[in-house]
Length: 286
View 1 (cartoon, rainbow, N blue to C red):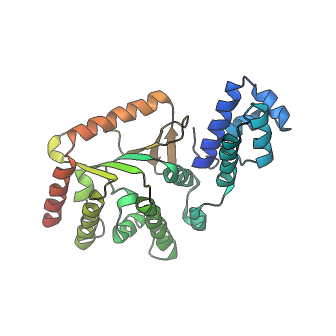
View 2 (cartoon, rainbow, N blue to C red):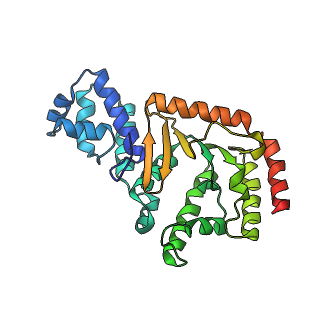
């Protein structure tokens, strides 16, 4: 599964998955594949798990070994090599970007569906600037200054994917506590709720609130995100963040568990129209 400082960004994961599928279809062992590109079995494993960079010559040799000769297919796979090795837009934020979150940005940028439940904060994709700054200042040792400005800029830059020509569908369920927790003060929270109203009107966004009045719910374990990709063979991924890092789950049984929780949350939470009215009510009360 992806995770940690050596985790794959999405193009590496996709390319590695395709190479593994071609190898298994051709009934070629990892040892044979490694021999073809003058490498070890473990190198093939790391390539297929997206944990290393790719050389175009190696990928071309492997495709030939696997009997992949159709020009369009070869061209598509080889085009992923450049993407997998390219410098990402978030590289300029390296000084404030943890390795474990860099992996998430790569996956988020390639996802076709993003589902999440948030217990404490507005999702980063929906945060207004002043709210994002208030969240950034909660970190250990955080103080106003250039580093915090960089963290806020990174958070806002992530939101560009909502304005892409073909954006992912984003479905988020927020616990009412997210709206009631006064981060940054009254005016900051009112502006943030206004931002949520704008987001809720986007055709590719489904926003729901889980009010206190609905009692307990299925996500007692806390916040999580789920990422789905269009590329065949790339598994859904569950992302769980904690104070010191993050966990990425891609085993089918784990993904199915969280998918079931997300479905139950959506069924119990306010509907999108009810959520819009609830947001207006909370804003008036703030």
